[in-house]
Image 1: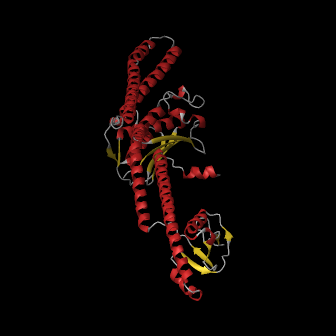
Image 2: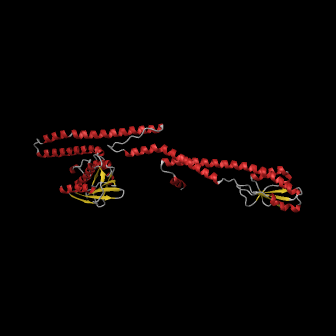
Length: 441
């Protein structure tokens, strides 16, 4: 339970943890230093007090020895001091083993003589940190006198406390600033890693600062360059293969026309159509890397969605649009958004024959959902279908025309729009593809 409570107070960020350790160590060291100084100051003050008290007690006892017994009580208030006084009679208390009590006995006995000094006692209100001592004494005629001593407390003035507080604040600020400067390169590296997107140029980290930070930034920039080169090479390879396959497919199509067997010719044409669709999808997927290079333009989102729905309706499909029409213009990459929604609509119409488009706007986000009543996707494969060339064979086969690139293209376009594409199965059956974009400002 204690460990759990400590974990709740333990900062989650590296900066918070390092700052907590550094500031905590500085404060603890500072407090211990102050306590040591106060202890030393108290010891010095105690030695000075004992030296003064011993001489003053000797003087007071000498005065009382010379004063007639009848006048002695009147002299007691005159001989009293701020922290100690005198009284006639026997001392009542418990034998004290406090170090101050033994020191008091020794210094007073050195001035008066051991025969005239008894053993120091403590009263019930005494404490180890602030003892209340009673020291039995005797005058020359044997009259008993009690020295009632309240040692002064070692205190710190308000000015000293204020200066200590300001000093600790200055130390805390210096520690916080130092830690912030030290961990800032890590925050920059995290931001740069989060900004990495396929086909989108990113600024390299500045290679400056301490030697370790410079080496880490240089390694990160080299890794980023390798990733960009790999992605670019992959897209170029896919585009080249898809482009170069078009000519052989065309020649095969021409040669298949010369086949006399009609059934065989139909099968060859079907296979060539599948190959042609795969090539076209490959080219489309390769072009998604260039989506981030499209300039941002304002667009009436409802009008854009309405035009896509009307195109599908004119083609004989059952498609409907639901959502507010009075939206402020959305700054986005219009062609990329058009391709993305078209892909989602084509996917829904291909497997369900109908689709619904829902537009919802909140204060923080804008969502475009394409819903169908098709077979849906197994829950364990909702993430996998967003990867290139992945198809769900149990529900979507090649006879439907699927190549496994439609949703992958939509996923890449969503990233180019700084959005997020998610898939989920509807409770009443069918698939919901939801695109989340930043809300228009």
